[in-house]
Image 1 (cartoon, one colour):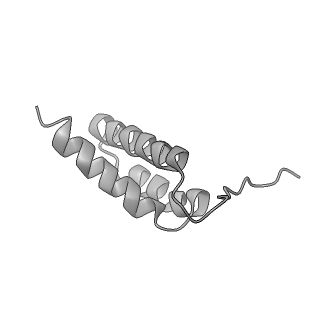
Image 2: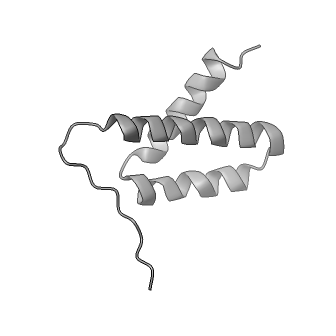
Length: 75
């Protein structure tokens, strides 16, 4: 049976690689939203983030999505 990978941090400090990964998730989901406009799909993926990357991951990805939309895709 294949075991689910659990992300573990060595310390309480935020991991730069985790932050980069969450930013990439935000960019990917924002692009998916812009192309498909499928709210249910985006919500399903956002709900899975807390289980995959730890508590508060969904909120961080949502914040990154808003930041990317406001600063990079305002054209």
